[in-house]
Length: 295
Ligand SMILES: Nc1ncnc2c1ncn2[C@@H]1O[C@H](COP(=O)(O)OP(=O)(O)O)[C@@H](O)[C@H]1O
Ligand code: SF4
Ligand SMILES: [Mg+2]
Image (cartoon, rainbow, N blue to C red; front, side, top):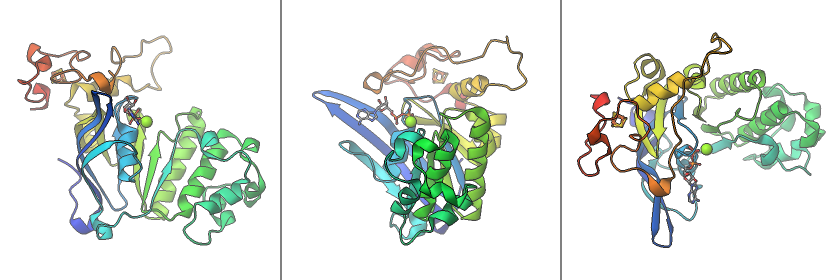
């Protein structure tokens, strides 16, 4: 089950997206058979560990993946098929900003028309005087607010926030995510939140797509997926969410091992080398018919 929207309400529809890279005779397919949709003003997340294909998927939505063999469909039904304005904010605001340019000029640079940097700064709760400053004069949280202001200048219908707070401390992380949430509602934007932390998804998204090894392994309404996870990878991610009420010396449950390289995705179910409930058939190429836990 997915977020079921009519064509006129479907901002983005991705179907069977596949992104492949070639190196000599070797082939890597870091995004495989990915389908999901985002309705107008909806908050949708893609969650998974690093290396699962989340960023590539979100970049493909904006037509920003280069030198790749891409197939499948990326459509924008609500905008009559034309790609609407999409803005991105990334993990490291310090690196995304130009160190030798005043932030006011950087905000205006991304604007579709004449943007009022002071008004945009105000909307991200920064004083207008920040426009005259250089990025090095601001904190990490302030830089991320500047990036959000710059993203808003393009008047996007979709804001892609790719691990927007991973580099920030916990308090600033909450402030920035609350800000994105407030602004997206005020400005009627949809948000695609990319994160490895299912705990954030619970608070800031309506629908979630769980991604492992280039594939969406489970999706649905956030509260359903969190209350009744079916896929063993989703269960592992839920167990890995740091609990605020946990004893300091309690062991952190996490998924053993690491995400394999897309140059060597395992045969059968890609999660089988790490799955606590794997059956013998899960690792068999050819005979694998989907996760038995999902039925
Ligand atoms: N241009 C590229 N060429 C080859 N492999 C790439 C390229 N871009 C990304 N990848 C690989 O694709 C995989 C998924 O990357 P990414 O989408 O960034 O994952 P995530 O955002 O989930 O951490 C990674 O293993 C990454 O190394
Ligand atoms: S298919 Fe098998 S190995 Fe893969 S997640 Fe399901 S039970 Fe685990
Ligand atoms: Mg990424």
